[in-house]
Length: 136
Image 1 (cartoon, one colour):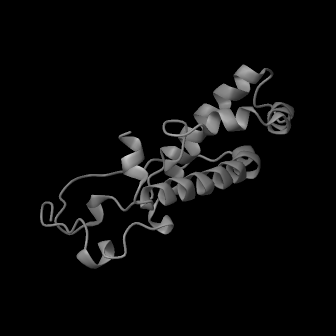
Image 2 (cartoon, one colour; image 1 turned 135 degrees about the horizontal axis):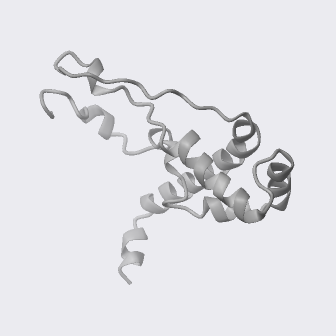
Image 3 (cartoon, one colour; image 1 turned 135 degrees about the vertical axis):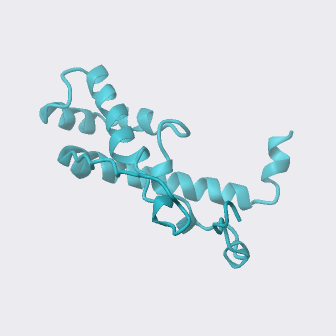
């Protein structure tokens, strides 16, 4: 309990962490090579250039970096605590921003990468020898 709010329930932890428990949007340029992976995709770079998202690879990189943050990583889908009965304060939702180019072209590639990355990391953490290998 935190300020009389339930933080977790014991029965949710008994099954352990599963892929569906992990937010895909958490896989971004802070903890994975997603930006490098996208920048290695020449077809993607050319497609973004053709749609006005930069004239050079550096400008496309800047666009991708900002777009990943604004349209994915910084989005918080959790309910704000102001929805809880014990909260007494003001909270205003941030206006949602959209970018159809990001949604259509970039996001499917990021989703694919993120699911693979999460599966890989989750399977590594379930390996009983994983933590022993880290300490070698």
